[in-house]
Amino acid sequence: MSSEAAVTMPVEVSLSDRQPASGHRQHAAAASAGAAAETTVTCGSGSVVLPVGIMNPSVPIRNIKTKFAVLTGLIQVGQVGNRDIVETVLNLLVGGEFDLETNFIIQDVRSIGCMVELLEHCNITCQAEIWTMFTAILRKSVRNLQMSTEVGLIQQVLQRWSSVDDVIADLLVDMLGVLASYSITVKELKLLFNMLQGEGGLWPKYGVKMLSVLNQMPQRHGPDAFFNFPGRSAAAIALPPIAKWPYQNGFTFSTWFRMDPLNNINLDKDKPYLYCFRTSKGIGYSAHFVGNCLIVTSLKSKGKGFQHCVKYDFQPRKWYMISIVHIYSRWRNSEIRCYVNGQLVSYGDMAWHVNTNDSYDKCFLGSSETADANRVFCGQLAAVYVFSEALNPAQIFAMHQLGPGYKSTFKFKSESDIYLAEHHKQVLYDGKLASSIAFAYNCQSHRCSALPGVLS
View 1 (cartoon, rainbow, N blue to C red):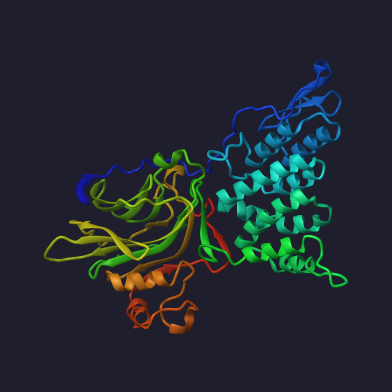
View 2: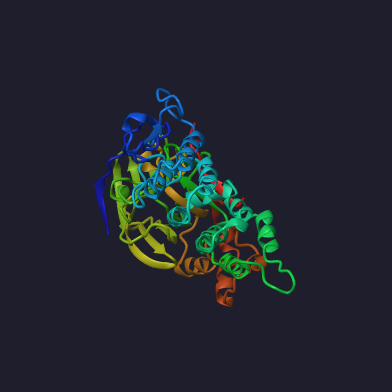
């Protein structure tokens, strides 16, 4: 359903990075009976009770390695219990008070290696609880998976495998499977295969468990390469100016996306932009999310235009193909048609088309032109296409058959190893799609990140 409405533009604010939440102060270690023989030291994300003489309490601990070293020392002298260890480790990982729904993003990649080293000093019960929670936060966010990949967590775990208890081995297999299905290096894969070598015709210890890790590797959902948007101020892809927007034959925006919010609280408050194509006068096209719905906007003059609501229940952490088709008509109202996963889900009139001779010099993927923290996309985008034609349903459905991993230009039938029906191949490779690409962006490396500063 479309309606004419005044569109309130976001107020421009500073593009400086959003600081991570400090969290609530929380005790990481229980005090022992002799309170007089202890001192509380501030560790940024919480307070740790130290026996007098271990370190100067007047000096705040800011380095993450030092924080873990302090906790390790307390474990070695028996000053903390399992519950306090688990809470403190999780708090240090997320840089505040850990919560599986509201604060679960790892803030410092170095904390992962520190955690692995610290667990060598913990008992089996404590290790099991921490690994269980760590696997849970890996499943919650691609950013946590990416950080664990960067620090080489698979290699760190496999190198310590000989000393792993049976109970912990089962938990680590689960965690390794989650990581390996996201990304695994050649070196890590070789190390995994070496651990499968038996002696005397016998399987090595945990050999069968390692096979289950290999079994999980192909179970990947989504593209192999994508743009990753961390959800911070100014973290977006800034496009070069577009001299003239294609509208006479209509146009189509199409991509695969996955929302990966920092938490589940601000879903209804934030308005993350999927794209924004505007002139310096603020007129043009955009699409942003409000809750789980997508709002497509067409502004003919500053602050006034048309909006169309795509009432589709987009769920976080799921891949969707979205195709937004603008159909231009000279003699009657122009139209908009919205497709999700190749199917028409919403349509309506979009009476005002944007007609201007100004260049579109405020064009962004994953952000509005202000790029403040509440209007940047948090999640992943696969290849992005803008066509200078209003694509028809058959073309969009055939594009969906290619899957989220496709990132080419529709020129060669043999470019994809996905089985396609002959009529889909005809629609995709008859030359019409290839010739109508106005511009396209795709990530060539394994993971591409949109980082703060691209707008400067």
